[in-house]
Length: 212
Image (cartoon, rainbow, N blue to C red; front, top):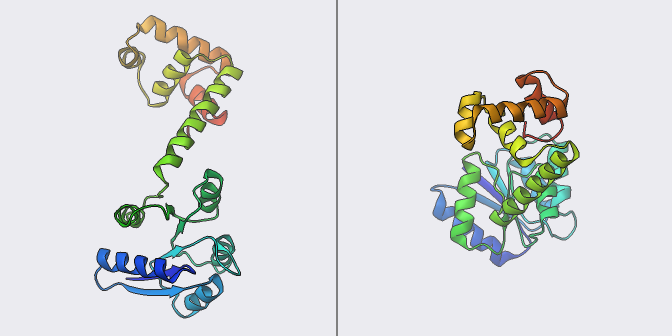
């Protein structure tokens, strides 16, 4: 396994190298103090298994490095390790192609767990951001439901409908009668202007009332 660490703080680079060597036997680690130097490394070693990248560096910043990788069509997983912890920056990094975001405020054990999860195929985000993202999504869904006159109970039925549950199963899950489930479905058909269960689910996904 071979990894590249990109950061302009030698002490932090040394800490990451120590961490990676503790995590993986026989890992080869290169380091660079700028994005430009890192790109030169990649020209000679395009086979890195992953890259740890700081955002704030002299010259090209982390976003410019991510764009450069994309332009070169190099599918090397990039993990951002940065002191920036605002949601906008984190989302921008993921949208730019990073596979994970680890705050520098994490301890080494936390970083190790995050790297392991990313190495296992997961896109890693800080827990605080996950909570913000979930709250934002829930608020957005609630707002959309209100726009279409769909109540909280209507939406609960819709969620179980999307999971392929029968009227009886939905009634059991929500502790209501089958007759009440049918009434909620009729309301959903009316509000979404649909005629059957499948069309209702598909229209709800299109409108952002459900996740696709």
